[in-house]
Amino acid sequence: MTRPDLIVFSDLDGTLLDHDTYSFDAAKPMLIRLKHLGFPVVLASSKTAPEMVPIRQAMALGPVPMICENGAGLVDADVQTVRTGPEYVRLRSGLDAIDARLRAMFEGFGDMGAERIADVTGLTRQQADLAGQRSFSEPGLWHGSADQQDRFVDALRGQGIAARMGGRFLTLSFGATKADRMHNIAADYQNPPSVALGDAPNDLEMLNTADYGIIIANPHRPPLPEQPGEAQGRICRTTQAGPAGWTEGLTALLSKLNIED
Image (cartoon, rainbow, N blue to C red; front, side):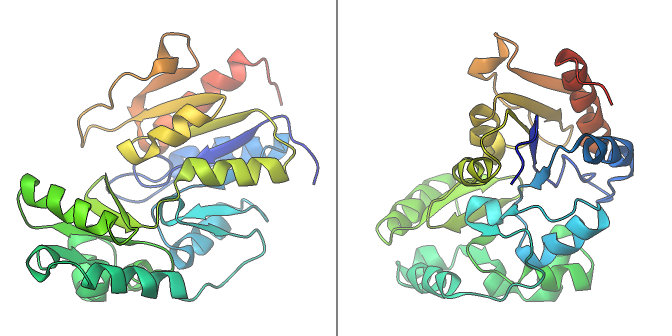
C-alpha cells in the first residue's frame, strides 16, 4: 500500500456528521480536497459496521478501512456487509451474568429493539435497525445512580468487560479503543503522519495518539478538558461545531503543514 503524506482519523457523530441532522454537507469540499491529495479518511465511530458502510459510500471515501463500535472492531476496506458475531454474544452473556439488580438498571441496545433505539437516538427506524446490528460492543442507557453505576462497572470488570461513557450512552466492550485500532491501520499505510478529529471523551485517546489532534466544538456537551498537547500546539480546538468545524480544523492544519493542492 502506498504511503500517503497524511492519514486522517475522524469520529462521526458531532464531528464529521452534524449533531442534529447527521448531515456532512459542510465537509464535502474538504473531503474532495483530501481525496485529491491522496490522504485516506478513516472513519472511527461508535456506530456499527452496517451503519458505517453506507456512510463510507455516501462520502465517496473509497476502499479504506474503518474503526467501528468505538474501537471494539475493525471493518476492512473491501467489506460491504457485516453480521452479528460471537464476540457480541459473549458480551451479552457476561452482562447477564452479573447481579440482576444492577443488570436491570442498564438498558442496552440489545434490550431495546429498533423502535426504542430510534426513540432514544433520533435515528430513523431504518437507521435504528442498523444501529442494533452489533458485532463487538453494547451501548445503552444507565437508569441508576452514579454509585450504582460504579458497582455495575466493577461487576462487569470481573467478566472482562470494560465500560465507558461516550456522548449519550454507556458502552460496553472487551476493551479495545479507537487509538488501538489506529496503530493497526497506520501500520498498513506505512505509518504516515496522522491527524485525528473528535468531539467527545471517547475520542481523547485517539486525539492524543495522533501526531495532530483537532477537538471539534460541541455546544451540546461540556468542553473537553485541556489536553497535554494543546500547550505545544499539537492539539487544537475549532470554533465551529460539526462538519463546519471539521473543515475549519483541517483547513488550518493543511495550511500549517504547507500542504497545497
